[in-house]
Length: 285
Image (cartoon, rainbow, N blue to C red; front, side):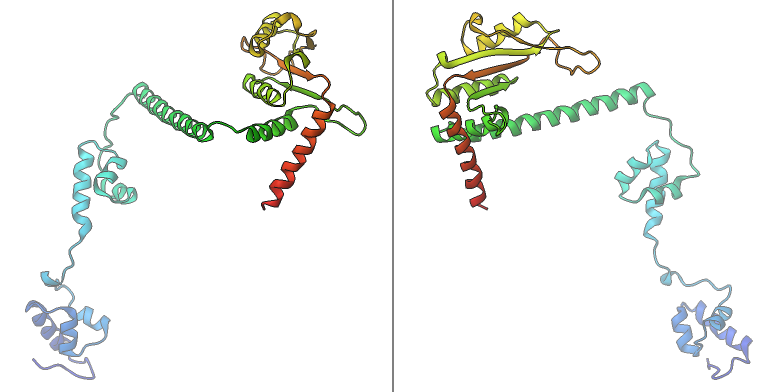
């Protein structure tokens, strides 16, 4: 067959050649090169109505996925389940199966809510186990404190929770108040390290007047290991229902106040040690 060069005036003759080549199994590119037709519009007209040979067709990988997605949808699977099964996007799945009926819900609303609550409970349980494990691990890392470590811990604790001397109100004495039994135990251990004997400690409870005062006094007396009778008169705080905090439950014991007599020199040591800690921390920066 002879190609027509330069002009496509003999269109019908050129078309017959193109069709013949197409039916022989040539691709568009092969026909173009054979006939020297480099104009795509002309080439399209020459090959109009002639399907490409099978070997030139690219396989569509999504055809198989589409059919599988439709099969799974007809089995009642949701978009999420099909996505997990096939690894394709939910937008594609939606296009492939949108003409198919929606599957019946697998669970009633009550069952769905129960399953959701059960899953949430398992999640919270796992969270709580993780919290407890973190705290347990941190607790075991501390080990036994040396006297120096206990001293510095007590100084920081006192400076955070204890009464401080002010230029306008000289109060150079140890006065500590807290509601946490463990904090009180640590503070007492610290005082013991400083050779402060129990006869120099005065105890007093500060609590809302609506609470069980005698029970609170007994609780703190048992904690510090003294008879309730040696406690000073309880400080009662006015109870305002509109502004009261949630501290009036059965577990509410108020705060314990511990005052150490003849402690001016000890207070000065604590203040000096505190600023020593501050300077020491800054020097490591």
